[in-house]
Length: 202
Image (cartoon, rainbow, N blue to C red):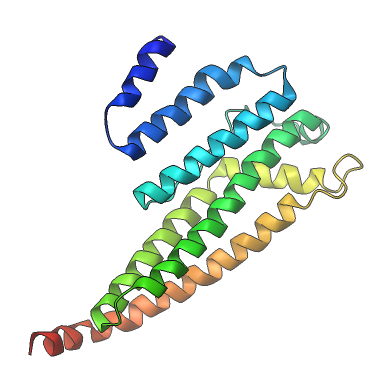
């Protein structure tokens, strides 16, 4: 499929679908053309990341993007490749932003939600599903490998001062804590759900 036909596909479907198609188009066509131009590639990757975040906000669902980079078996060679580590770092910064934005969105929903008991149950169910979905994606083998590579890279001379791996660990701990809290609240409130329904129907 040529780029013109791909672009024409953006005219159909939902806004979220259009954003997803645009993101794939930029990655599969234009990003590959900017391999040698480091600055242009970084700017394009950031733009793609912004598109992904907008798509999440529009759809209400959370998804992460994995870098289109082959992950080798040689750790020492990988952490010695500064460009590769920068690409991994860009991907990890995107994941960190996704975590932060997801937590913020869930907190905003809490502020806007109805004060009824049943609305509270649905809020926590939605929050638990959102957090669980994100944790599942961030537990992908590729994410774990990239995290371990960046963690090792941050301890090298070239990577000194790079805190992206440390920040990712911090945000993952927070996400896991919030997910545990959401699950416990769902478990507790579910035991009271029938009583709440009876009260609202009276």
